[in-house]
Length: 511
Ligand code: UN1
Image (cartoon, rainbow, N blue to C red; front, side, top):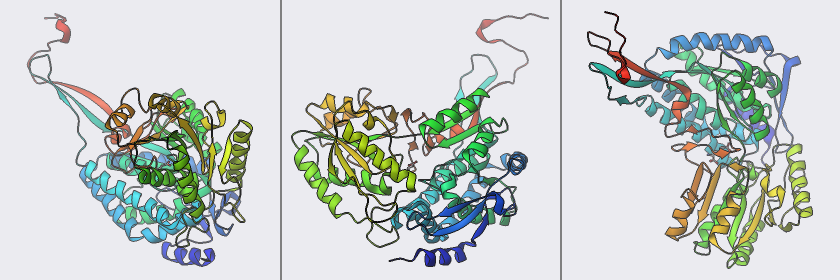
């Protein structure tokens, strides 16, 4: 059995962490205050990891002032130079990948390779952002007026706010903060209180680079509750953009508050991701893709596969083989070799798992596999439930490894079942039939922000834009041109003639 205390002590030494850590950074680490702190406890076995102090209202206020001032200097730094700073930060994160990954594993319960993968995702978006720093472009249009030039440019937006969830405790922050930084914004980060330690570990490394480079504080950290700090951020006109990752319910509250002051949001809310398994699929690929999507991170990804719609001709064979995979998958301490399914994040998550299974049964669902705890603590068996259309529980996102299996007879029916949920983040189809693929990728097909073919709903690369439709909130983060969301678009008309000709042929003769 890997001893968590030993791993904690070893990584703490390397990452300059302690039993008591300040959780507020705004160019300097504010003093630790025990009366205003949260405890980080490992979901692996309840081991105490650290106490992290939180921001008071006045700490918060000062922090926003500081990053607002830093914005002035940073936004005037040439973008490629900003990119080189993010490269340096990414190199440094890479040096500490193993230890940071262990912190993620200990605090969020991710298995070793996923903990490491989370840190790799930070490095990937960092290098991507460096590339973007030389690609901040705008369009030039033909002006209808003589001796005029018409173009648009993207201008840094200001200090921005990032509120992140427990399940990707560092990668999703870096998707936002690194892009924001290369386009010239400063940012403040409020992480989920469940993973405060990871935020401190990451910020310790980053703040060192920022200080070595004598930069203004371009990244700030304010640990604290969503009710207090999240609410202050949503209402704060000094933050023109709030990027929020989390539940639909909280996202709606934040969106309402931010739009009440006509601020911008990037929302990445719930997913209820589905895989269609056609009778024309490669069964091995479909099994691997569904098993990873449904069980990885113990079903606690926004992109987790929560529903599978299987052609009736192969339903029994597919479910039979999937159950075998479920039976053989190793559940337990995520730092142990070979373990693929770690714990749920906390007791509430375990209760939600059981409540969803009970509701599913009441609504007519048939338990095919799982449905119970695995040993002591927050460990549960990944679960498969045979479901019927119309079971309302299958329309909810339960952050646990529960997979609802549906049967279909014709392809259009499969797509209808697939789309019949409020959320629209990720989706996939397993088929070797080009017509089915293309139908799935057409306007009548998947209504999600991410639509895959022959691979899992989970595990997106950073190079594409990430986000979803409907209740998922419509935001796009990470790759492609998501950088534009962190800037304001400005249309510019320049006159280099000797007169002032007007557009639309309007005359205004004052001579
Ligand atoms: C999330 O769950 O909020 O695509 C992000 C994936 C990861 C990111 C998930 N790269 O599963």
